[in-house]
Every structure is written in structure tokens, then in C-alpha cells.
Amino acid sequence: MIIAGEASGDIHGARLVKAMQALSPGLEFFGIGGSVLRQAGVRISVDNSQIAVVGISEALSKLRILLRALKIAKEDLKRIRPDLLIVIDFPDFNLRVATVARKLGIPVMYYIGPQIWAWRTGRVKKIKKVVDHMVVIFPFEAAFYRTNHVPVTFAGHPLLDGMVPIRSGQTKENLTANGSLIGLLPGSRNEEIRRLLPTMVQVADILSEHMPGIRFAIPVASSVDRALVETIAEGGATRFLILSDRLRNILDEATLLITASGTVTLEAAIAGTPMIIVYKVSHLSYWLAKRLVRVKHIGLANLVAGKTVVPELIQREASAEKIAGQALQLLRDENRLAEMRHQLNRVAQSLGPPGASKRAAQVAMNLLSGN
Image 1 (cartoon, rainbow, N blue to C red):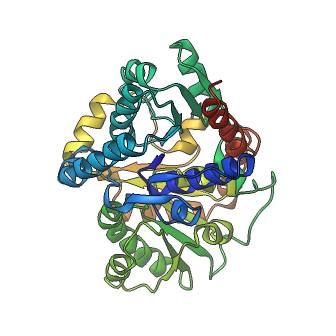
Image 2: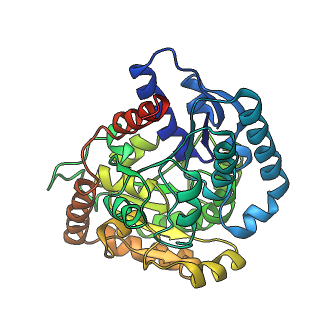
């Protein structure tokens, strides 16, 4: 059984499934996920587009749906009794399912663990009780779990399995030329689209006034309602390329990204694409995060670097005027963009070698065999 509650987990989970099937072709999978896991042959009982949430208040608004999905997951565990439960990120949900698995004697592998090094570090006690093995994607996570006596393997980042890092010093195009492409990446959940895309559309209008001929592209994840994106995009004066499942193309071709926080910032780092990270959540979620989060950055590219490599504009700072101002400064300063590409290349190199999915699959196979 495999559970991936969000779009990025769906992709990484599918790669893991394929790697495990390569080692043991007779394996069967079922669980919670999206279209990518379904395409990998996983029988999906709950589509993760129904349960993906951002922030605490957003989770409360979907509580009924989340509880129903949790009930289905628990019932499936008891009825089917899988030989292994693999959970991916999505901690508040997955740790509850893992607790039931532990009571049933089903081994649990946690792949891409929760960011408890950033907040709610006390959850490591729960993980120690219900998880047999952690498989993590950042080297500093492995040190954290070893310190807390939790079995752990650093697999490297699975993004490297599907992306080739940009070569150091490589450039993409004349960044100040008319026709340069700006990628607008508002997220992989409908809640993020509603909260971020209207501001990004305003940013596009401002940039178009200052740099005529500039182009804008919006990738649409499979977990997002395309009609919602189109409706919001039509509210501005700018025309947009709206492309389904074409994120990699945009990362490769864009001069600059204006992106939500999340895994995509690491994808951008691997592609060597300069970016501005923007994020907004509800007032309640932000108020709680300010009091609970222990790290200085929200963007994974900055967290991995341990410093501010790319700008972050959060909550009130994420206004159209401020985002556009930062973007114009970058677009007009090739030296600053070149330095950002260099720093992003260093971030990509620190993520370890390719092959994370294969290494995670080997841990899963060891658990299946009782090792």
C-alpha cells in the first residue's frame, strides 16, 4: 500500500513503484494518489486531488473529506493486509495510517519524511514508534534522525532521477531581450491557484508595461482544475501560455520564474533557472507558522543552500508591485542572474547523485523480506 497525498509525492511515488517492480515484477500496489501513480499501475482508492491542502485553516475546511479518506485507508489496511505500507510526506494523515499499520504488524517505510527539522520536532517520537525505516532526501535529515535513534537511509533527491542539472556557467538566452519567457508557477493545489495566481496575473500586467514583448507561461499540474487557471488568467490584460503537464519545458526555457514555495523550487535549482519565491496562506496559518516554524527560509532552494540564494516574498510582502519590482531588477541585471544560476547549480550538486528511487526501492524490498 502506498499513500501520496500531494502532486509531488505522486510523481516520486510512481518512480519508486517502477523501481520496485523492476526488482520484483510480481508486486501489486494500491492506495491513495493521483494520475501518475495510477499510470504506474497503482489501484487508487482515493484521488489525492480531493485531500491536498495548504496550511492549517485550509485543512480544517477539508476536514470531512480528509476524515473520509483516512477511514478508507484504515479499512483498506485491515481488509487487504498489505505486506508493506509506504507513506510519502503528508505527515498528519500518514502518521495516523502508520499507527494502524503498526498495530496490524505491517511494516512501514516513510519516504520523503515530514519537515520536522523545521517545525513540530516532537513528532520524531511518534515516528520512532510507528515507522520501521525513514528514507530521506536531504543529507541533514539523515543526521537528524540518527541523532534521534530512528533507522534512516539518505537516498538522495528523486528529482535528480528525471532532471539533468544545468552545467556550471551555462546560460539560456539574452535575458534582457524582448520575447523572454517568464514562468508563473502558482502551485499544484487549487487553493494555491486561488490565492497566488491573481497576484501573478497582476505582476504580468506590470512587467508587460515595462518590457513589451515579454511572454508568460503557466504550467497546470494534473491535480489542478485547468478551468480555474484559465478563468483567473482571463482577468488580466496579458495573454498567457497555459500548458498542461509542461513544467519541465517551462523550467528549461524560462528567463525567470515567479513561483510558489515547494518542491518546484528545487526543480528550478536543478534546471538552473533564476526565480522569485512568493507565498500566501490564510491569516490563521501564517500566524501559527510564525510562532512554530524554526527555520529562516520557506523556499527549499534557500533551505538547502543555508542562505538566501533567491528572493522570498511572503504574505503582505507578496504584492504585485513588490514582486514585479524584484523581477525587473533581476531582468535588467545579467550579472546578478548569472550569480544566481551559479548558486543554484551548487544547490543542485548538494542533493546527491541520481538514483534515489532505486536506493529507496532497495530499502522497501529489504523491509518486504524482513531485513
